[in-house]
Length: 326
Image 1 (spheres, helix red, strand yellow):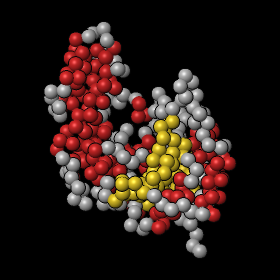
Image 2 (cartoon, rainbow, N blue to C red; image 1 turned 180 degrees about the vertical axis):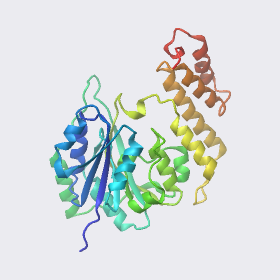
Image 3 (cartoon, helix red, strand yellow; image 1 turned 45 degrees about the horizontal axis):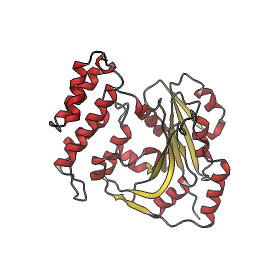
Image 4 (spheres, rainbow, N blue to C red; image 1 turned 30 degrees about the vertical axis):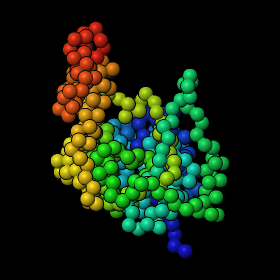
């Protein structure tokens, strides 16, 4: 029997000492032995660097000045030796059996370049300030034993094959749920480090142009929801909007399988992204960015009453925090 393929797990880390042990534990306990873990300390100022050092040879640690997750992933890719690449963030958790099932699927389907699963949003219990405990190590060991004794049949969802059209309408692939062939990542030249947020969405759009991506019908990760998450910060750049407009300009609205997204669907999608960006800035007291985003949304749905209300409020309510500027 041939040796199992090496999997490289890449984890960007920035000021994650409070959650790092849970995230790394969920990777190291997967029960898949042919694994290397590369953590990239992205200029942390808390105890993350010291905590990473305690893992010894189990985790390879690289360091860079703070440049964001895309640059961190690219740095790790330069050192990765795995045939398959997986990604996890330092505040999220994989569930038992993720790697075993996804490696088996890619081995059984050589025409598939990436496989991903479902995820659960992981928030604090109502009225509490702490997260529920992740699965204990015993749960991972039991799942690995069960899979080796009797592998479960693969169950896929309707999201499989050419996902370009699906991705134009929604960022359907969460990077922490995926396993990707290294050859496919090299084909699209990794992540766009100029994008501080949204680089994973851009990556999947580019990958989907020429590679098959399948979703397994299993929940494989917990995505932690908290105020410090990079996706909940009001960045000036509307990365998702920029990425989508750039992609449409380069490749249009039709995938290789012939499926096309209609103009009406695209206008609704672009409106939603622009309005959501403005709404976030509005409630963070950043009127200049909110106003710009609302004006962008108007170009996609001019007669939207709720949009007009918010856009006007950025001018007419100087006492509201959203009218204070950026």
